[in-house]
Length: 217
Image (tube, rainbow, N blue to C red; front, top):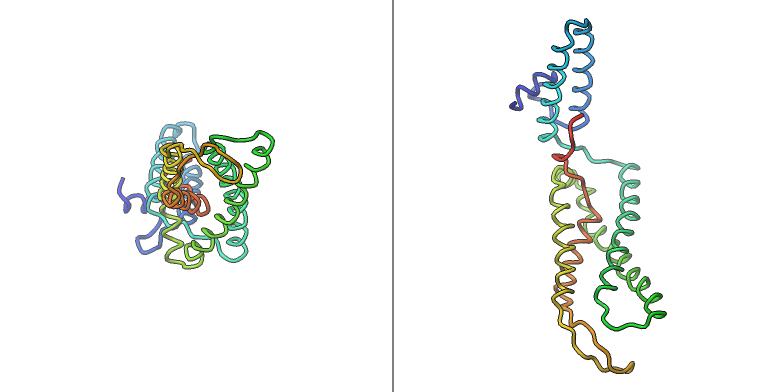
């Protein structure tokens, strides 16, 4: 089904900007109109066919629609929610990476040190990437593109996480001598790790579920 046919079925003119809210309202209206017209038992099959067609039209238009961004208080609330949820994800991931990168440890000290190290990494990371990504939330044109292309944030999360794990896994274990004494540690490429981690953190902080993955009801 092409876009013009889908617009016609849902009663949306070609001049109107497609937004997810507008598509959903048009879809609900079209379903109500269909149920009012086809109310007899003999029209049951026709009703089901029409509903399926309307659902197809809805899916076509949602794939092309702009998801209008939140404004005002809603934007602030969304940012706060993403800060805490994203911060928790970064903390858990950083903790796992810290534990995975450790080759020689003292049980008692490590149990205290690992969470502190993860917290020190997660909180500043979240603050930095949120500040860097503010234009995505404040500039209308960038905000619309951000919300329409959630696949990029999904790719960023996956690539950043895999790269972070890969940098640690590929790091050779070398002997280290300092004031603590002699022990083994991974010789991690910290620049590569920083790049991978910032990609992961940025994608988590500004994560958007891809619109194309939303199933039509």
